Amino acid sequence: MDVLRTPEARFEQLKDYAFAAHYQDVKAHDGTTMRMHYLDEGPRDGEIILCLHGQPSWSYLYRKMIPILTGAGYRVIAPDLIGFGKSDKPTLIDDYTYAGHVDWMNQFLTGLDLNGLTLMCQDWGGLIGLRAAGDQPDRFRRLVIANTGLPNTTTLTDDVSGMMGQMYPMVPLPTAAMVQEQFANGAPRAFLYWVKYCAEAPDFSVRDVFGLLSSISDDAVLDGYEAPFPTATYVAGARKFPSCVPLLPQHKADRVAGDAAWAVLEARDYPVLTAFSDGDPVTKGGEQAFIKRLGNVKNVTIKGAGHFLQEDQPEALSREIIAFIQET
Image 1 (cartoon, helix red, strand yellow):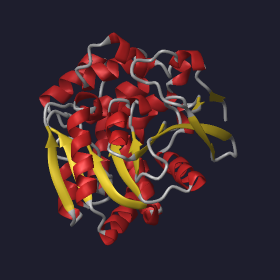
Image 2 (cartoon, helix red, strand yellow):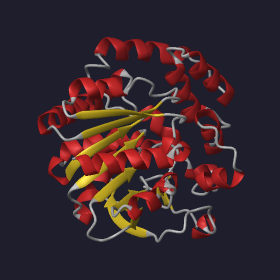
Image 3 (cartoon, helix red, strand yellow):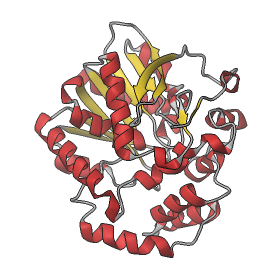
Image 4 (cartoon, one colour):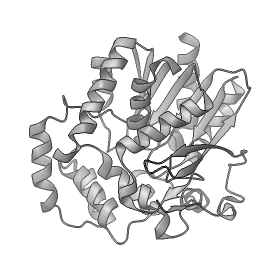
C-alpha cells in the first residue's frame, strides 16, 4: 500500500489550531503501518470525550469546542481518521472501505486503551464510531449523536439497495452546483449525485464540499480544512467516503454489520444525546431512528447550524454535551 504523509509545513499557523500533535500506529489489511494523528487536551484524569469527524474534515473541526469542553474539566481526544488531517493517507481510492475505517478506529481505541468514553460523533464519525461502540461496548459510557446515521438492513433493505443500484448509472457526472441543487430540492437522488461527484468528478475539491454543506466564508478557515490535501493525490480518502455508505447491493455485508452494532447499542442502553442541527440537508430527520430504537435518549435541536454544526454552533453544542454528561 502506498501511503502519503502531509508535510508539517501545511499545518503551520492555522487559525485557532494551536494544539500538540500525538500519534498512534495502526495497520492496514496488508500489514502496512500507518500513523494516526490525534489531539489529547484537558486534564489527564478528566472524563474523556472522544470527538470523531467525518468527510472531508479533520480534528480542525473541533478546534472551537475543545477549549470549552476542557475548560469544563473534560479530557478531549480528537483523532484524524486515516486519509484525513495529519494522519497518513493511502493513495488509492480502493484502499478505503467502511470495514477498514472501523478496524482502524478499533485499533486506535485498543492501542491507547481508552475507556469510560463519551462518544461525540458527526457525519462519518458516527458511521465509524457507532460501529466501534458495537465492537467494543465496554469502552463507552455515553453517546452524543449529531448529523449522522448507522446504516442497516432495516432502513436499507435489499429492495431499496437494488433500486439505488439501478439508479446510480443513470445519474449524470455532476458538478458541485448540480449536487447543491439536488440537496436544495430535496431530490430522492441527491445522495447518489453526492456519491458520484466525490468519486468521479474531475473538479472535486474539499473547498467546494464546504461550499455545498456550510456557510463558511472565512478564507483562513477554508484554508485550514484544505491544509491536509496539498495535491489531488492526497484526497483519495475524502473522495471515497460517500461511496462507502452501504447503499448498493455489493455493500450488504456493511449493512449486516450495522444490524449487529444496533443490537449491541439497544442492549447496552447507553445514555444517548441526539443533537442534530436544523439546517442539514444530508441528515435531516435522522435523529428519529435513534429516538425510536434506543430507549434512553435526550433529543435537542442545534439551531442555526448546517451539516458542520461544530463549526456553526460550537458553543451551543458544547453546552448541550456538558449538561448531558452532568445529568448522566
